[in-house]
Image 1 (cartoon, rainbow, N blue to C red):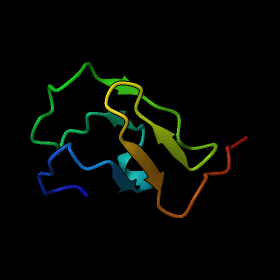
Image 2: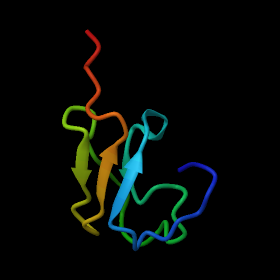
Image 3: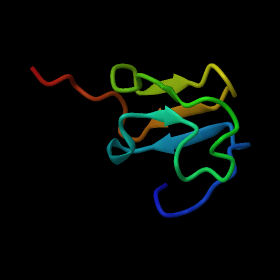
Image 4: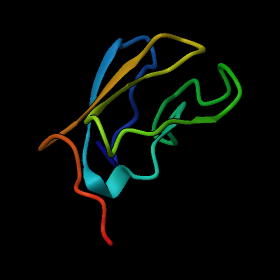
Length: 68
């Protein structure tokens, strides 16, 4: 996803570990100031829903095991 500008009208966005920590809106979004930045936990479940705009984020490869 990095390197390309995307409209944040898209409602399902696949992200990778390089996009973590996940926040919405993401820096690559054209309308980056559409709502306040909110950080969302995605590592444990592999998906997260933005409480402001409803965009669903899915972590490519699924949930990440917590390092101990």
